[in-house]
Length: 281
Image (cartoon, rainbow, N blue to C red):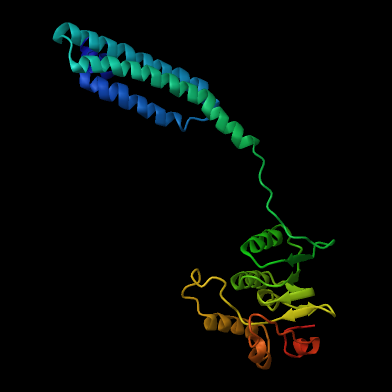
């Protein structure tokens, strides 16, 4: 029996025969911290069984540590290590209680929060009664772009984008144009489509406007030169000239595309738009 106690680490600890430093740092502190890490991955449904297991391990830790401390006191007298062991025993007992409380309350709170919060509904743009067209209205901003993306994602029947905007960010116009091209959507204007809006319009598979609708074109400008350092207006204008040309717009129209200054609009008449290829019908 004595040989088994000598050779078995677990039994040796129970009888207080392990080294005091090993008991203090390894068996008490590191083992309890490791148990805390294990607890973080234990499912909430197993909280009670885990507390029972953790409690049994704590009893083994504390009983063995007390016996080791008492044995050291009788054979070596009181030492710093001896008193440190008593202090660690108290710390381990408190830590175990806190871990058990966290397992019962904290984990439960996380589960309840995760299951009780309702998913946030993403915004969508207005659809026609037959859900085949989507209305893209207002300033061309990244919020509008994200809402447009979500709309065409959840509404696969959309085949036409109805634009009504005075413009906005050129890069948003390009981003919307890219999605219109990717999805093979047609574009239409019932009222007006100015500036960056026209970039999106010309990406339509087929393009049409109402009798009194207006398309307005002008040169770009930088709203905040400090935030757009390194951006060349000439290069950006050329990017969109290429975009218009790739969608069938005539060279004669392109020569007039960005002549108007940014404070005024060039609004071609219906026949000019049709003859130049801006409109397809």
